[in-house]
Image 1 (cartoon, rainbow, N blue to C red):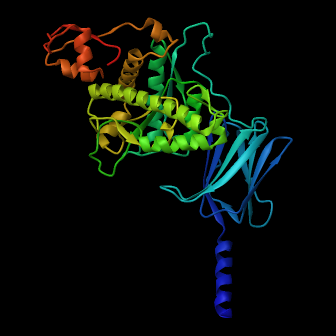
Image 2: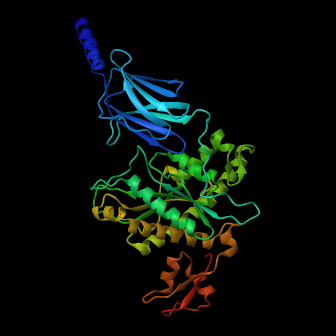
Image 3: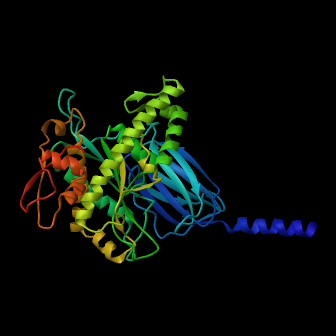
Length: 432
């Protein structure tokens, strides 16, 4: 027994003596905080502390070894980084800061292509909460007609690259490029303005993404992604909304959490309501949001079908965290399969990125012009939509394309049957 215990102690000492290698260092700068990520060979024993005059943050790693050619250049709140050895077997990394910072740190277990990681997030010292989200331009005066706000969420970012294509294309880069193209087109559209949730290479937590949209009182939330699958032949775009079961579970958490109860859901504060009434109000708000999400998603999918092949003929439902807002219609667009070499090549093409942005905007435009939010420029100025019949088109196909019922399309155009003529201009009803 004593021999076995001695061997166990020697093994433990040997493992500890092996130390921790810092094999990579990356710094990401976002609008609300700066993140530093250290790739380490094992779970690290570390401590953090701040120094003033000038402002610095010090990271000490026990039995640490720095195995990188150079530390990254300054970005965000980090002006620069340097290393030293304050004691035997101890690695010290010093962050030279542009201002006093409040640090949060945590260790990540190996996942995917990553091994152990030590993450340090730096927030401005005088800000206990993230900075407010700024809209694309100043909100209109309350006496004026407002624009509808389209929140555009570029998936992944920073330390989370998302899926990768065969030639190394990263999902986070593609989604940001498409999101910026979409934002540009939204801002050029009368009565609309964009809100880019992520406008750089940094990571935002899933919950913060849809909370940013809610804080800006967005009228719709669109998350942009590029799918991946183990079969490289999988192709086509997809449009997702939140599954009903997930929506119900999320509603329960909104009712249970004080932070959520005191928030506004559908314009009603839940904090002062009894549980039964709050549940009814939330259910009504959530039901309307789910219905609007499905309609908007259907119109975007119809527009993507006109651009090219879609993976499925119908909108899909899944448990995506970013779609869990209780009062902002939300959808997620998988623009293509980045794992498909042909689609990966198209996703990198700025011309195709613009075509995707145009298709998504077409769907969003159809949605808002069919049910314009009260008090908006679109509600006051939207013109009746029309469709010029092309060769081979049928009335039922036109109704499906514009997401209206065949009956309403007949009625608004005073048609008794389904015969259409090439070149005929049809009015598209604003609702089914």
